[in-house]
Length: 102
Image (cartoon, rainbow, N blue to C red; front, side):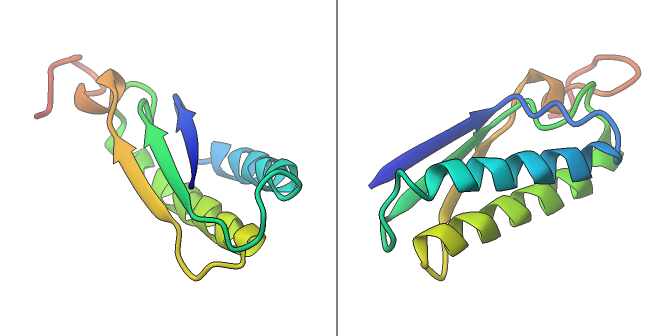
């Protein structure tokens, strides 16, 4: 089993999506030579997902993670990749006040 850990995406605007998708594809091209096809991967995504707790950006993060999962499935030739997400402090604070949301 391979464990892939990614942290601190800090998505700050919707325009970040295309740049980050390109980075995920680059990551996939690096991993394709390191991880044998058919390997089991656990992908751990650690916060901060967004910058300053901006709730409007979580759909962008969801799309990004879906793209990452698709890329990992492609390089391993598996139908599904286990993904675990853990929020960070920026994900738990309100954008304007800094108050905790949970």
